[in-house]
Amino acid sequence: MNNNNSPIGMINSGLGGLSLFKHIREALPNEDIIYFADSKYVPYGDRESDWIVSRTTHLISNLVTHGKCKAIVIACNTMTAVAVETIRAQISVPLIAIEPAVKPAVAMTVSKHIAVLATATTVKGKNLKSLIETYAQDIKVSLVPCIGLAEKIETGKAHTAEVKDYLKNILAPLVEQKVDTIILGCTHYPFVSDTIQEIVGRDIQIIEPSEAVTAQLIRQLNQYHLNSESPNEGNHIIWTSSDPLEVADVTFSLLGKHLPVETTDF
Image (cartoon, rainbow, N blue to C red; front, side, top):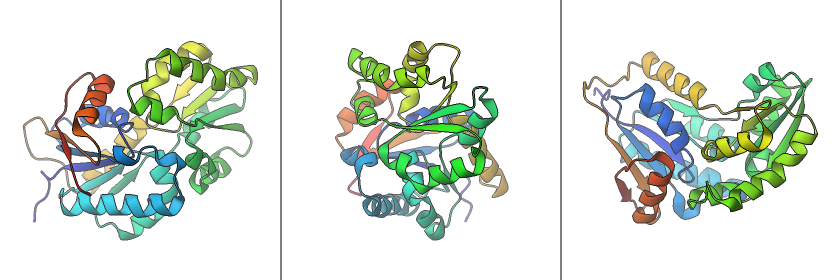
């Protein structure tokens, strides 16, 4: 069966992955996308690993089975950190997973001191540890668990004084320690990247992996001949485990445009 015009599935614990969705939508305008926001259970960063693996596996199975998705993008660093190995062993469609941009940060740093802002689970995860051991052996890496930040962004507080004060507190030590490159290790965080840049100044580089993940998705679609054959603009929809009106409101605040939202019973 030709499934070129089947949708791409994206999954995140909430709406943070919309930062990656924007890149994919711009790069692949003819592709249909189903974005699953598990907002009922956001944030994943404070949950047990076994629960994350079970929940992520269950949701991706439903995206493939019910959504007929031809490829899956894990748009959540916490999911990647905990569940990607299990999912790769079970899934029958191309899987692209986001992860902190350690390798490019190492190539960019001059001070030889970089920082990773991420959820507590990502910070503790073996995936990030492996990236650091592989690419940053001679680099100082400060790991900063940003407790509660994803949840604040998820509830529409990205541009509030509360979030700005929170960021000032966690970023001040990094500036003092001469960090010159900051990795945004959670897909929620690009929505506050302008605030982070304002706080740390223009001499510190901020990087996140959306462009690299989008490029990898394009390579996978080409490799497996799965590119959409439709000449029309793709359809985009959000599936969620939470209140669709609340999800729609936060989506508009983050993207500046409305997307259709449907509740699922997954």
